[in-house]
Image (cartoon, rainbow, N blue to C red; front, side):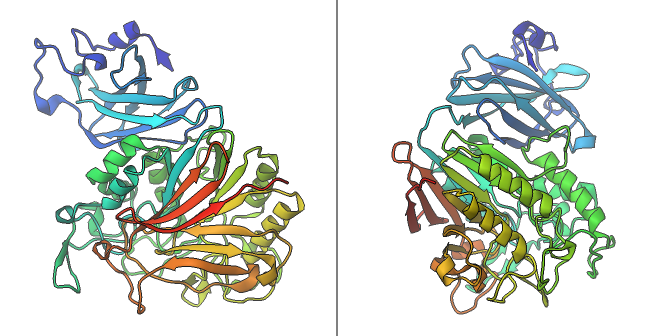
Amino acid sequence: MFTTRRQFLGLGLKAGAGLGLMTAAPGIVLAEARRPLLTSGVMTGDVTQDRAILWSRVDRPAQMLVEIADNPTFANARTLQGPTALPTSGLTTKLDITGLGDMEEVHYRVRYAALGDARALSEPTVGRLVMPGQRPRSVRFVWSGDTVGQGWGIDESRGGMRIYDTMLKQSPDFFLHSGDTIYADGPLEETVNLEDGSVWRNRMTEAKSKVAETLEEYRGQYVYNLLDDNLKRFNARVPMFAQWDDHETVNNWYPGEILDDPRYSEKNVSLLAARARRAFLEHMPIRQRPEAPEMIRRRFHYGPELEMFMLDMRTHRAANSTNQQAATDPASALMGQRQVDELIEALKASTATWKIIASDMPVGLVVGDGDNFEAVANADDGLPSGREHEIARLLKAIADHRITNVVWLTADVHYTAAHHYAPERASFKHFTPFWEFVSGPLHAGTFGPNTLDGTFGPQVVFQKAPADGRVNLPPSEGYQFFGQVDLDGDSLALTVTLKDVEGATLHQQVLTPETA
């Protein structure tokens, strides 16, 4: 809800202490201890044609105060009163800002006023975002997954999570985080001895000293990641579209699972997942629908030529199994029938040239879970079975309805690759060729490469992973990856570039749009 400047100042921000002046008037001297402190920077997300979610976190109960402008000097800024940060939300606040459709760039400035003492203001934190616009124009976004995994936390002596700075230098319009936004099941050790004789030194917090089980412990995983200055700078400049995968809760989890892990006193994964989901929704700039506040799957237009369909492959899945069910049934669910039905209808209705399926798990790569399988593929090159039935139904519908220019983006496997799927190489042949691009990790151990299942005819066009079977390589080894997608506003060609932590181009694929 927008307020007038008079109403805004009526909140107690008087005598020059308002956001627009950035500093308190000389006559108002406040002890620093009375001022709220933004602990985790600011970020935006779930951007549409005329609105965006603005997120921040503060160190105590306080009132969120925001200025919005179309210029970095905040001339003629609009002022808003945001939610109150309370312990019940982990001291986070989210404000759904509307009326942004007439802006190309949105500049925002966030402060908090202490409850009971509106003169006690935090220092301001500033950010910006680029709006999609109504006309075709060039768009650039980046994607990847997997942050602070396998024991590799923030080593400030090595520059922290440098890949976020590298991605920021590409000037993307937005960022797709493809899951494993945290590693709630991955405690950190203060030091890790590396093969080269050096020592990795993790910044430590109480939350990262054990696996997360309580709501506060799950919250602490997000707060830890946001101690990194690279990530905070990135978040303040690049809107995020966030997915979740398994490590937001526990490795390879599924609803109804009972853990056999001595690290956990709470063994009921459904209970852990409920706490994990709440922490995820609190700490990510996700727009929560009143009718379905816990929904993670969603879709977005970014301009008229690009639409993104964000899947949820956790909430509705059945138990991990040998993945050989002969037909679609509850035991073979991954997305679930309703999500697949909704995705098919949304793809049919899309008017965008390019349809991006943001999948938190790959289609053809074999991802094991002991003797069972964690993702779609089941290491059987024959006709679809198990979870492959859902993908077969989706691919068949895309072909039957002549839905063109569908591209899959994913992460999860901790290396980078480009895969082309074609019916002439496949056991299941009722689909049109498509590309799947894999990226990650952002800041986690590097693994791979995984084997490909031949059911849908995938072919490795490019991949980069550790050689000689080395596993869990630290970020200092350089095997950290992200992908970049460029949509040309004139030709409408889509260029997908796989890059490393230094920003070097590893592989580039130019896709020309097809017509139905």
